Picture 1: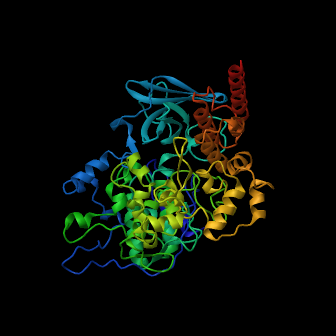
Picture 2 (picture 1 turned 120 degrees about the vertical axis):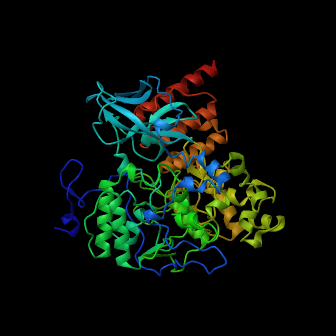
Picture 3 (picture 1 turned 90 degrees about the horizontal axis):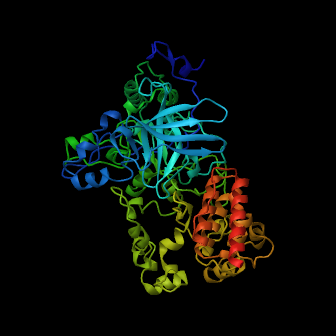
Length: 622
């Protein structure tokens, strides 16, 4: 028996012994990465006369709570309270939602669900075709910017306000705010077609860590452990290659054990920890997986210290200690991939990547022609932005906050301006050789005032699947001329703007302008033997699922009504998110909503779309 399995808590809430070890992590938790070597970062305070960093900002006792920030930082605090991140997880009893729990039904395959109210409380009632009806009292809402997800506990239909029959689970319905319609919860990411409605993972073992505020230490167990660490709620899926990953080191095993003991005591576990640091970290992960509860969060939702770190020392000594984005502690050290102390920018970006880091689901493909299991590239959906940014070459100096206001919701018009030449200063503050219209035009080979000379437009193209069935910017800063992208991904990134050009036209132009050379045989494997074909059209017909979604969207925005039939063909893709992008593209091209049941099988959805298009064509020809 392992040391972990041998440690027992004297008794649990139900009077039975609770084992710490041996639990398997839920599917939503992700495998660990990160090494176990590297020099420690100094946690010493700065010399008198200037504010210094805290001695410790990762232990539970280091946290003061967001309310302590309000007196001095009222403007930021007020904006933050209204922001999407702060509202990421909310108790339904203390908030309002967009979703109308008015008795409406939601049919999914042969199953059905109802969103209803009883005595002013919201419920989801599930009736599977091959099982018993179940009633869930909705307790929490997750999100609220583009969609709302829900958490609830099963209750007795005859006594819905009585004792819960199960732990809180993620419910299978989302409410899409812009379209005012329900949708199967998992279909915002690249999951394969589902065949029925059922409550999902236990909430406290699934999405609780990214969507709420926990102590900094509690998300580091796997990073400090190193390879083959146990998976738990704090595991991440950043899967950064060795030349990009941060390295975490235990610098004082005894103090680490003390910190772990304090954290686990807050979870109700008081048994002695093993002396070996690896074993102690493994115990901490297992205990956290089994025992972490809402009551043991630092805060429900994203609080100030989710980003700024434990700030009790700052609250107690505002002039002498400032909050730090670095991990400050007397028992751990952090370096970047090169063994150096991380820059301030790297620490900020690592902070964002704690949550904006996932390659969601088991979808095998990533950008740069890679796969999740072998040298993963960038994510093709939203929510991996910070991880993708760390993959690029600018994250040592540039920060996420260079473009995004972390305290409020970015205005769409402000984000749009970043992709205009007037905003190139964000990039040319480092890349001085491209300052000025002449230098910009010489580099881009486009007129200096045109969209083709906007740094963001070319180096962060819109090719990731967003939550509202439109493309959003890919945050791995690179070039559309990078060999890895040209020869590994479809469609060519230049085709996102130049939708009328052939593969050969685009590639030959890149070779001429930027002194490049690309493997024509490799391109033929992507697009077919005739490189005079349009890369968007060829991607739509033969690309990977995420690539087909991109091609459909771009062709729709280009007004390519001649591609209606080919776009309709992706409505039977095995990934429903791709189907939603296909439907949105058809609606943009035709100008009307399509009467499609998106919860039917892919084959049925495609057939219904093709019948609708045939009827439309016949009607217009009369």
